[in-house]
Length: 378
Image 1 (cartoon, helix red, strand yellow):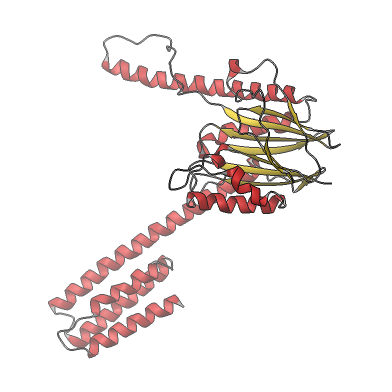
Image 2: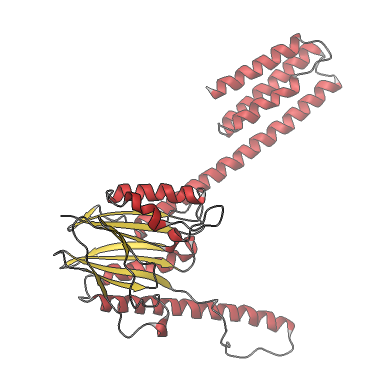
């Protein structure tokens, strides 16, 4: 349909130019046809319309002034150059679109492998989850969640790697892999938390050491080329937290028999318990430090217990939700907004929150955000 309109435009400009007075020249307007075609069609269609426009301008020149006049020669040359530029830009745009499609495909594949969707039903629980990545074209970043069945219930992990987007993907993959491998092996939740912290701390320490040595090697090469003496043999210790990395996380153990929920909070925002009487933040009395801080890890993780009755819902989220700002730099009021929808089905609740959160920030988040809703069935 749009191509037919551009062809009609070529015919219209050609006819009007031919019947117009000698001092009226509409032929240069023919370049509009390939320019419009490039906005909705591919390079071949654009080149075809450009060729038709060039032929139409040739017809105009032959009918009016002859093809040897300086005016028509200038118009034809300009039309040919501009048409070539339009087609060339369209080729580059199509190549970029193909590359973007490949990036989306890889990102979606990474999300399916790394951040597996939570099942809608697991044991006596209804689950729903949503992930909003901050980086354009990314489907997954540094926020994470996972669920695992044990002999007595369901264990949930929601975490947030320091940083955002694809740069934190490796740390998220590390923690998720450790959780899936060990969630059903440790009978006690503190033992699982200690195992996760050990796995994350060891890997992050290796990465930090490698990064430190890489920086030292670059400085050493620069020093050898500029100084009359070699630098020290061993890399000195560097101050600051440039290599520091950690993961905030919350671990939940939800028994099938209706017993209270057991929770370990490792520097993460407290989950919200949505019940008929209102909303309660499950804030730990003694929160543990984030995972991956090595020597700062406690000798024994403290477990908190909270009632979780049939019909109640748990909302677990990352700080990308509550730290999202609007145009006036105001934080997103999660507790206030969720009040109106606390009785909704988990999927419907997240649908409302996702739409409201994006409206609050104007459609684009500055940090990754993830939310998980868990409902205990009667």
